[in-house]
Length: 121
Image (tube, rainbow, N blue to C red; front, side):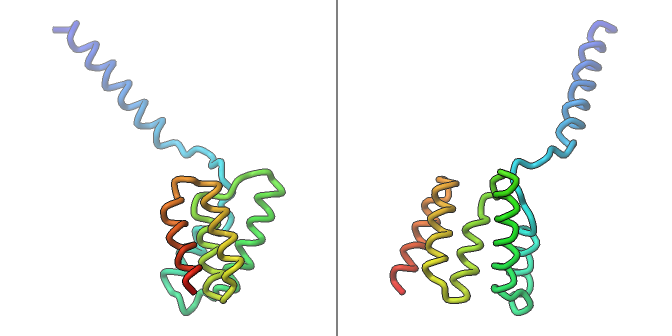
């Protein structure tokens, strides 16, 4: 019976170590800046979050990311494009959507839809 318990204990110990290792936070490859907070503010309280302020903050964060040679996270350019669209800058929005599509090809279907809707206007 003791021979069976040793492999079970080893398996439990391995599982516990794997679980604890998975809980350790790893540094992100992306430069997040205030992106998450801006998105939250935009959708949580739209009247309070001025698009111009979000654009200003995201542009600053983009400059910081570039100066540190780090990429911005997925969705960053798409949200920046959305903010540009809100203030009537369709050309800037188009450019951001194209950038998002180029950096994250998995977003192509959604970005193509947004680009098509910009062309209709």
